[in-house]
Length: 82
Image (tube, rainbow, N blue to C red; front, side, top):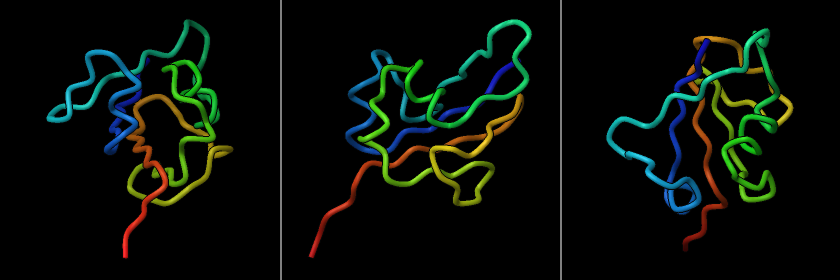
């Protein structure tokens, strides 16, 4: 059981070995079929407060959004600019 993860910009530095070209595959523990996006981030070592945008299967969600086996998740940090 797995979830495809994509990380943007500074979040990539928080996950050792992250490959920006391919993302990474997050494996659910045996018996799990879903998790909150917040729990996925924590297990990957990303503090939830570092995430401002969550996309689950190309739809905007939040950290309480449910992530199921086979989903695609993208996490984005705060974005600045002028």
